[in-house]
Image (tube, rainbow, N blue to C red):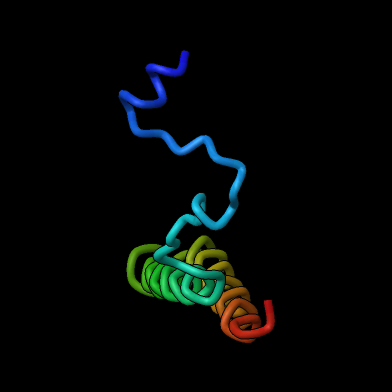
Length: 82
């Protein structure tokens, strides 16, 4: 089995400093992306409720879109605290 480690250049050391993984996104970046995506989806749902469904279903779409805004607000408030 040792030849597989050398072939694929896998580090099996127990020294954790060698096994560091460079992460491109931290928790704040993930929350920022989640906030942005939820704002876009919320705008889409409100747009569907306002322009596509003029009946009672439109009120439901708009209400869910406002709910997405509320959750995005919470995500934005959590940045820097998590």
